[in-house]
Each structure stands twice: as C-alpha cells, then as structure tokens.
Image 1 (tube, rainbow, N blue to C red):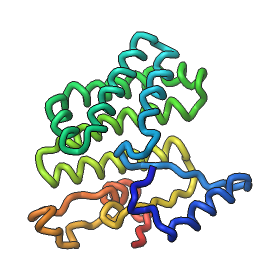
Image 2 (image 1 turned 180 degrees about the horizontal axis):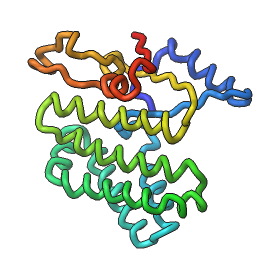
Image 3 (image 1 turned 90 degrees about the horizontal axis):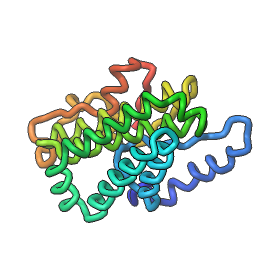
Length: 217
C-alpha cells in the first residue's frame, strides 16, 4: 500500500530482498505504520473488522461493517468531500472506532482463540488508527494536523515493536520529515507551517526509547 512517490526502480532491490528472505531462517517481515488507508485493497478492512467481531457479537459485527463501509464511501469521494464529511461527523465516527478498539481489547483472548494471535491485535490497532485518521483529517490547524498524524504513526510503530514483533530489530523507512526528531532545529517552511515546529514521529520515538533510536537521513 505504497503511494506513487515510492514507485521507483531504486526500491526494487528492497522488495527483491524481502521476497528472497521468505524461506530463510530469518525472513524479513514488512509492516505499515502510517494511518492513511492507502492501497487498492483498503476496502477489505471492512470485512476484516466485521468478520472478526462476528465471532463474539454478530449484531455488532453488522454495525461495524456498516460503519467502515460508510467511512470508505466518504473516503473515495476525494479529499475535499472526504474532509467535509468527516468534519460534520467527526465525533460520531471517531468515537465509534474508539468503541471498536475497546471491544477488541476486551474480547482479545476470546478472539485470539478463534483467529490466532495476530489478527485481533492488528484489528485493535487498526481501529485505533481509524479513529486517529478521522481526528487528523479534521484538525483545526496545520500544527495539529501534522502532530495528529505523526503521534498516531508513533503509536503504530510502538505497537509493532512492543506487541507484534517484540524483541526484533526494526528498520523504519519513511520521509525525513517523519523520522527526524528535532524539528525545532530545522526552520519550517512558512508556506506550510508558519511559525511552528511540529513534533514528528521521530520526536515521540526518541522521547520513548532514547538513543536506542538511531536516525539516518
């Protein structure tokens, strides 16, 4: 689910190495951490949520399927119409995803017995990301807009490091803006962030793990 900026020949060796490692003793696992629902298969999330919830509560499963379908119907209308819809329905939709994340958390052991360890964990984190995305898209100003996304990406990165792949070495690949940790030292573009130095994903990461996080641009 990579946006077009990454569709370059320079990226091919990375993906060739990932594929080549699949049958090795130490396969490379690829996981996303952005909160933007990008990719041609993004609408499969609705069935993923609904099917998993159905295990514990079929009625709520139908409600979740309807919620996520509504979200993607708005999402697919384009950025302007999407933001307008989300602004008008911000608290209802964001709170509904908060409730979904809490549901997965409360039923985690039951769902893991049915679907294995990984799927319910990913579903819970994706519900949290969905709520964060709604709040990010409806932020009142550019500083809030930038920080809402980057803090949520940090929470996803923390989830990957501490829950999904604990004890593994992780290489985080992203735009310099997101992985750097001292935005205050870099004058912001007045056209984008007038007079502010927004905290980035790298800032939250460095605050959380200290110098265990090594940033290379």
